[in-house]
Image: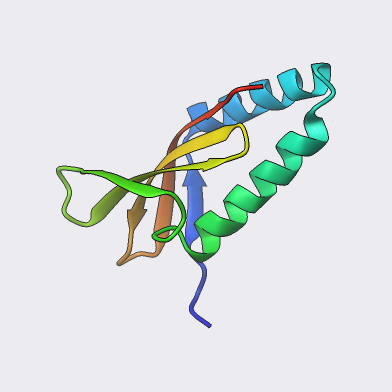
Length: 95
């Protein structure tokens, strides 16, 4: 089994995740959001180049930009294969 990728969310993504969690809780959908978020994070750690779909090439040839969906949660991220790092740039949810 290969080593997992390190997932690195930006500070703004962490703030957004807290806001989405708060909204999910107010709508009584926190379990659904939590399950989707957990599955998404597991996929980003294990198989970020299989999860989601390719978008565009960044100026850095070492980065692969992708977008993935799990239930109402969308994530835009970049994969740097050499360092085995996933950079989360944006998260949204339609709750």
